[in-house]
Length: 127
Image 1 (tube, one colour):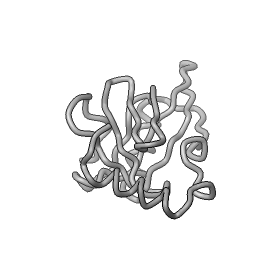
Image 2 (tube, helix red, strand yellow):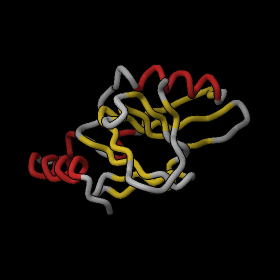
Image 3 (cartoon, rainbow, N blue to C red):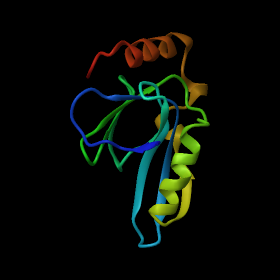
Image 4 (tube, one colour):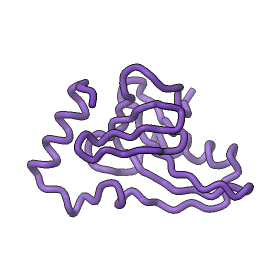
């Protein structure tokens, strides 16, 4: 079964075909979450609220302390999309706004930068 986030600690989860989305819930909460394809478990995954992002390592830290490596360019994940939709339903999201380009705009990344980010994301190195 697809996962929402597993609590923090340990190695970062590597996501590919990832997105960052800001949501507003029925109760007025506004948070940002990363979702995509977990390359190790081969399933969709949604994070708890994002609290920090490091561009140099493409690493997200969430409110639960979990870390996510964002591998490759942002995209839409077939495995991540249904997990995201279910997460939104369960959490009573009334609006969402894709803010991925605030974290990484593919038009602003050189080939050399992209290759360096991919090597870092998939090498298992931590921050």
